[in-house]
Image (cartoon, rainbow, N blue to C red; front, side, top):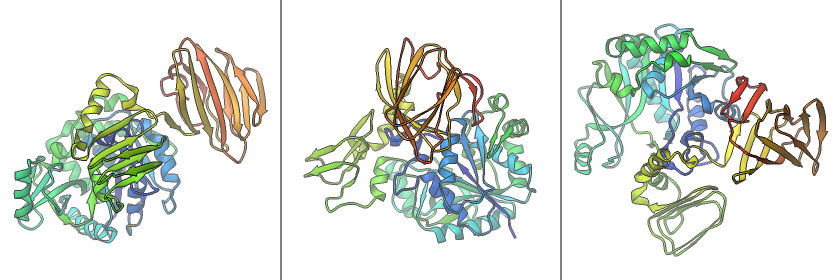
Length: 477
């Protein structure tokens, strides 16, 4: 029986889905279609396949806790799943190399890796399972298999695969112009490039040894020097930083003569834009897709999403409106691909709206910035039952904590005591302190910070339950 190891690539930012998708809370973590995130849907999809090993998720270091939290919230995921942590981004080829070398530590060369992006939607599970079975058989015979999605329209937002005789790949094509895309569709011999792959450890190593030997050797060393932390396996940062950055398509697939394609009709989408989400979603009688607190008056064929405030529209057509706590996007649906240009400008200007949401998730819970001014900041902090923040101190800011709901155990210098609803405490700058929830319901409090500097890097960590390093940190609480 063929042994299949699912590998889920959960990097990337999904910048075309800004302002909902941010660098520190990217597309795969969002609930876009239903009450599960795209990452959760992908994990469940591979767990439903018969005979596969527990999944491995490759994710950036900064997303490790929310990724684990989302996986642990699912039912039916085997305990043996693992999370491979990338200390920095180097595109998909190094990530896949790392997954292969990590699997090689415990599996034989014949194990088939099934590599899947975490942020794709597949609605036909039976067709997906059948395509995997075919791909695994080809991979066991030495092919490096990619999955070609049978095109439903002359889409210009995807790369294409040209199929030769049988399952052979003749060529890979870049995203085409409309006329070329139409010609591909009419030929019947071109497929959308899904970014999904299947291959054996042995074949991948042999082919990468031919075409990208430096990258393969570096990532093998990054795995060898990596460290385990429970479910997490952290690649060596210093080593990985020396790896070239490249996609698996450019590094291998366009060069190898072992490429094969399996045609698949999966009701597939990479949800690469707001327009793509509108096309996938259920619509009202006026063709609108809406969520949150919205009022639509004489509005047709629009995507309206309200995250925090009431959003009312009058007389709109074919328009995109996305509201979050700190940003509002308004654009024609037809221009949804151009959202990436806005994100590029935000990044260039080093605006927080590119990277952060007002709410930040941590292994112990979350915090939301309610107001931010030069010398004070107000946050709402939520701590899960049984969890606690690190033991820490600040050089420049003082903190006032007011308990809203639940029970808090406070460490304030040499003192340790309990606080209940409507009680408060004051943490002066320079004092070691800690916040813990000893109760069975969520702890919620309001934190008022004041001082000359309120940046998240004004935290010195002394002790932590979650493997975060002691000392000065830029990660925050």
